[in-house]
Image (cartoon, rainbow, N blue to C red; front, side, top):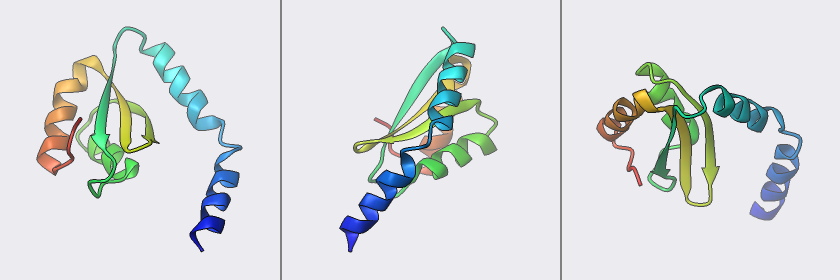
Length: 95
């Protein structure tokens, strides 16, 4: 059962060119003022959980993605400390 679902997810994610394009545009707009937050993806938090937590705290972020066993989100350097603090308080394990 999981095999067909994995195949469906791969097919469905193939035409998603908007998300990487937006992340690239934000990276260019924030050149030199960008840092990445890396989180453990198997700690019970989704990319959506992490980005919602950051958004609610007023942290400028973009490019939330799931990579292997990690979640990575780009933040402005001046928001890095606040992002780490907010996620730590929420219980998200940072790498």
